[in-house]
Length: 139
Image (cartoon, rainbow, N blue to C red; front, side):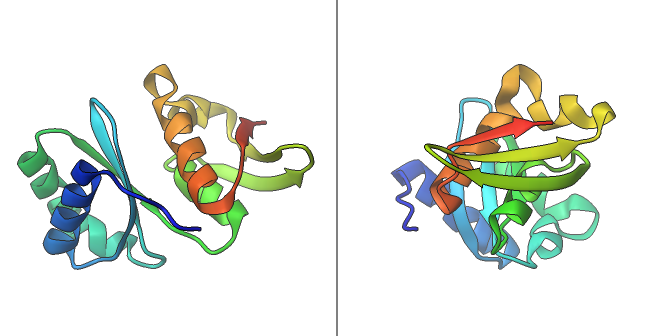
């Protein structure tokens, strides 16, 4: 699926690629944070030793940066998008809507949802853009 980025998202994606030398697949820009989707297998490189790359990018942008690792399969993608919550299983059901049901550890539901629902909302937006998933529900 083709994703179109805003000018600001393109600028940030370029900065992340320059700082980390990873492939940025998508970038969501919110008021209080940026969510960056990096290529499969590139999460460690994107984070950098001891989180060095993320800290440097956050200083340059003046906002929180959250990284999500891409995945080929929708189930793995949803689990990655909900990290750092412990996701045990993801099942995708296709009907009128495509819904991903994510089994999340009870103690990690708050991390999966995030303050004001920001984490699950970012996961939903990314899942819609990259795997045509209409909804993510926690079980």
